[in-house]
Length: 338
Image (cartoon, rainbow, N blue to C red; front, side, top):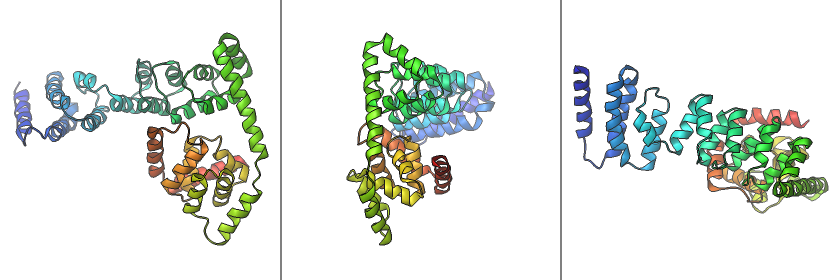
């Protein structure tokens, strides 16, 4: 009991410091106190902290709640009521990033999931977690998330079927999915779902058209333009951004091929088929700025299916990506391209 009285006194001192409108500061100080000693606290002490933290968190802003969620996500004996109160996107994404498979499956089955949460689930989860997300009609999936789902579906026919049935799958990803989906699965889906059968038929036709377009692309003029820039020492970030921003696919592909020492067809695949993360690796390895990399990403999808959240996620990935890591990654891509 004396331990609780001492703790109450310490909490009161913390709560009393500073004016009442500095609730975020008070919340941070109380959380600091809890996190520093959480392993030593018993049930009563945790409940005491829960009451104080819960009251402070109730009237703080979203960034403060997100910060609190992230800090409590790794605490095993975090106050249950506070956890329930903070069951928002940031907290759920934190759980998906730090907890085990059973937690991820439980989160993936929730009725309403944001792109932030499904991104975390698909980044850290296994095939079963991915299937649960894909089967959840209330789960919103980002462009990045669909890239991950389609990539995983290449070796999982059951997942491919789940993803194909989603009403919100962008057509670009549907085209890619159809190319990796086993023919028996494709036929079964088409025979049991007329609406899906039409999407499958259209995706097959568009994939064939895309392949024909790639085969017809003429890079002769683009090679001449890019080589002239390289000869003048002007094949740089600004030039690549200009090509991508103005929709010059061939010139952008040739520029990337030259900067990365890739075959032109391999550089062209970056702009049409490869996941966004591979494009970011290539852009970083080529020494491009985020502005240029962003326009290359937009060129890749003709500006479609690129939400502000997708672009912000890509920006953060690009900023955090180390040039050395990117160079190793592009070496692997170069070897794979033959």
